[in-house]
Image (cartoon, rainbow, N blue to C red):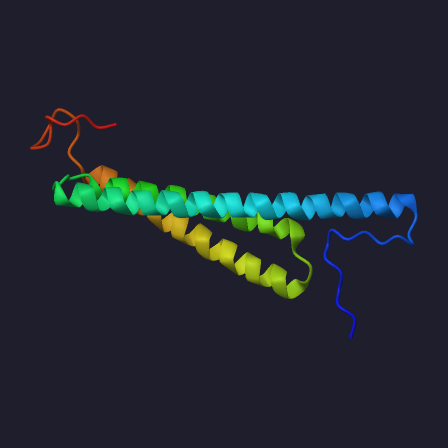
Length: 139
């Protein structure tokens, strides 16, 4: 059984127009794959940094620990969601579309819940200038 050639391999028998179409298609696939990897890596980096900072704030007994951690998680999810949206550009069949769509819905739901948590956490914190933590400036 013959192996499928890699996406960057151009067939010699086709005309010049088809070669350019294949070059452009291959360039699009490579650009999208690089973009997806970039978004995924940035999302993971933000998640790790947020987690480490969350532990540091927890150890220091910072009253805004939950808020800061939730904001970091929300930012990480935004990057991961961006990667999934970009992945829809190169989806080939209905099964992949359904899978990517389900992942996007789950991540969007998580983002919504985290933003809701942030809103509630901000409302529960004392206002600047009032309460036991008034000596700290809120950003």
